[in-house]
Each structure stands twice: as structure tokens, then as C-alpha cells.
Length: 173
Image 1 (cartoon, rainbow, N blue to C red):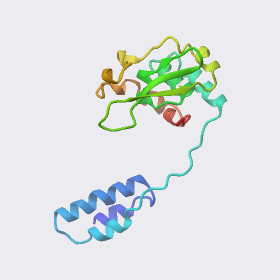
Image 2 (image 1 turned 90 degrees about the horizontal axis):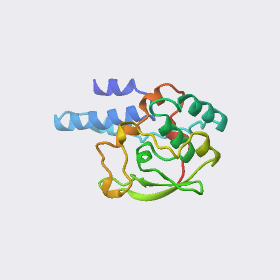
Image 3 (image 1 turned 30 degrees about the vertical axis):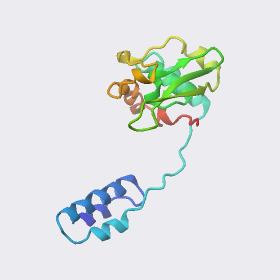
Image 4 (image 1 turned 90 degrees about the vertical axis):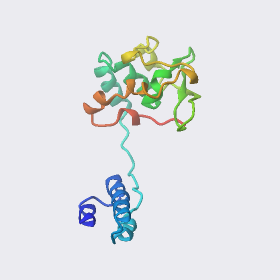
């Protein structure tokens, strides 16, 4: 029965991968046969290349949501390409860069990171010097980071209204 459920999921997707992992564990825990067959179906998904919107599309989107509750967060994401969870730590500099605390490493305090504005004109266009984060979620030092409050700039409400992920606008290393 579990394999029939897995067979209804699309191959090479996260849904199938997770279903196989969980159902194989259930079969192992219950000492039932078939876990090996499910484990054979556990192939890590290979995501396709994401479509990146044009700068014009980004400007249209951010102009439309800038006055909304998460508008400053959306503008900061579009301008600096940081992760949503890093937005509350952004500190803009005069030369078109922003310092932030990256939260890439689990179970560790955030580390400092620098982002470059792309393009610099967006800082002024969306008035990013005047920080506006819902719920007052803000931390500027690793010690001030609060994992429980980091969701203040999750942008879930904004992402529901648009055809692409705000967090995936740009990727900077």
C-alpha cells in the first residue's frame, strides 16, 4: 500500500523522496517487508533551473508591494539578494553595500556578511535607509540574534501574491 502511495508522486521530486524516506522507516519499525524497495526509489531530487525575473519585473513587483506591511523587506531582498531570515540584520552602508548576519550554519551564531546593491539606485528608489520591519524584528550583533523571532520577514504573504519566489530573486555568495 505504501509503495502505491509513493507511485502516485512524481519521480525526482522532493515529495517522492520524503515519502520514500518516511514510509521506509515505518516499514522498518514495524518489521514489515518492502523497505528495501522504497529505499531504491529514494533518489535525491534534481531541481530544474529556476526562471529568474527580469529587472523590470522586479521593479514592477517591488513598486507594487513597497507600501505594504512587508514592502521594505521585499525591497531589501530585491536590492541585496539576501535570504529572508537575514533581512532583520541588514545595516546599509554609504557605498552601496549592506552588512548582515548570515544564518547559514545551524546551531551556531550568525556570522557577518557583506552584500552589494544591485543596482545601487534601488536603495534610494525604495528608501531603504528608513528600515521598516514588521514586529520590530531586528538584530545587529550575533548575540542579539533570536531564532524564534527571525520569521518577521518571512514574506509569506507577499510570495503568495506573485508568480515567483521573492527569496530567489538573486543569489550572491
